[in-house]
Picture 1 (cartoon, rainbow, N blue to C red):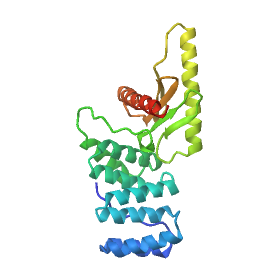
Picture 2: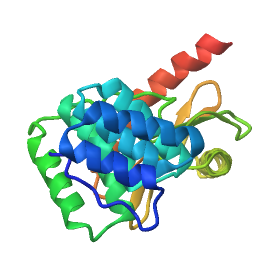
Picture 3: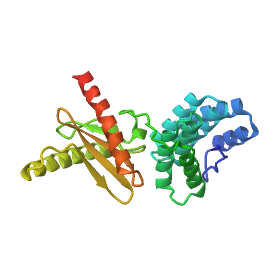
Picture 4: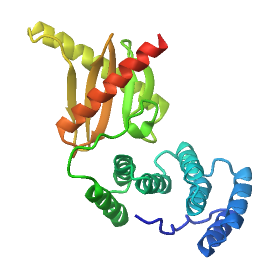
Length: 249
């Protein structure tokens, strides 16, 4: 994967054009100075944070680049440049599962982007043939994990980068209700307790996992994810969730 120059949108502030021109010339300190000064006047300009992320990545400061790209996503959820940048950093760090997730999110927003599709194919092709356990964090939207309590209140997480707090809260309430109704139906049918549910659509698959003592964990993955892998991921996340709940009691 390479960080190819990106075209800036039309009618951008002058500092963005200058910052991008300096970056392409390799004058990275000057580019950073111009972009940072511009951000002082336009702190919510996602394109400026994206540019700063590319400058920092060119300088080899991956931590600063990640901060800039995550800020870009906070300013503009689903920002393609930021998603590409975070995928690039993850790939450079050999965190292939994370790179794949960022690219999958980007492809969902731009399904006909040949460059994105090619990058996703390269990442998938670089992954080992055997099972690879991806790192999971309940507080990272990129993990696609959502934890909610027995009353449907969101405790932690979100179902993907760019999901708003309101949407995550609504998903938590729906997931808890779904698990509750499935458990009630199972009892009425004499099937015993429900350990997990799998919900499929044309775009995504969800696993809803019961977490003692009454909470629920939702894992979101693309529709192409094998159900076994999805459930295994949700089970590992549920263990983390149970420990998290124990820690805040």
